[in-house]
Image (cartoon, rainbow, N blue to C red; front, side, top):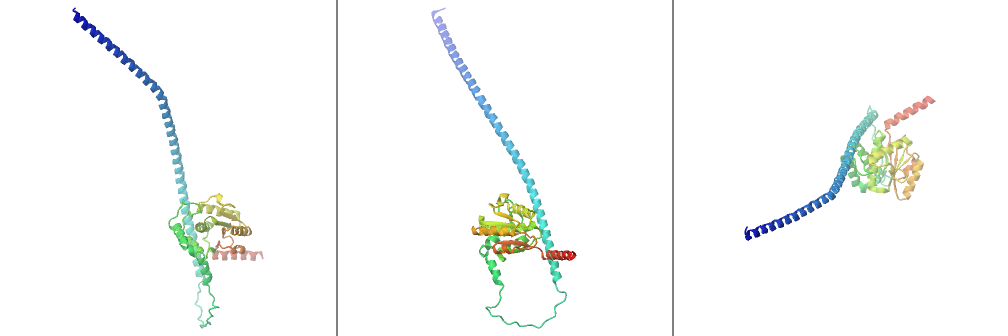
Length: 333
């Protein structure tokens, strides 16, 4: 072999050794990178597992919340349906009571009609009274009407809203029940003709009377806000319980709104109610006295206050009751 060939072979050997050294260094570098990747993976994997576990728990909590919300919505739907059914039943009963009262009034009117015309009598010319002595009946009515003359627009807006756009889920102290024209007429008369004091013809049931009272209270709350205090008088705990439940249902209030610190107080004795109303007036508050239909009597001591409402029984029912009492007294005699 010639010297030139030997040198070429040695050069190739050196190149191969350099290549081997480079490959070994590259291999070591790759092994180092793989080891680092494994180390990082071992560090990241538990963290990723924890994150996945947390997400799983959050999803489970969300599912449970959605399930509870679904149950609540279903319960509200069932209760709303029940409330709507009850409201329909109340409206039907109210219409029946109204129709019965209208028929009774019609019968009473027919009974009072004269069957024969009265004989003509000679015309009597009455002397013309002097202006200073002429009696006028319009003055008291005018004074009563003027009591809420400045609030007519507010009262009419409230009545229109209650009748045409009832809000069954409105704020507390706002009427939450269906309002019929016959009930609207009672409330309008009490405000605009009677000046916020006087008796209204009973609608035939305590529930309907409570609904009318609730509308009155709702409007007065618009006018007097939190200064209004409602004092309810009934002659038995059972009737007071009916008033409490009825006002809660119609006005969306709770039991905490009843009592000395609330807006509504319940009484069985007129004397205690009058004393409380007097104290409220001295405190610059506005007492509204509401009297249950009861036996048709009104305690005289309560007529001194500016705002009071009671319900007069049907005249025909009163005649029947008096006749029954007379018959009972006659039997005793």
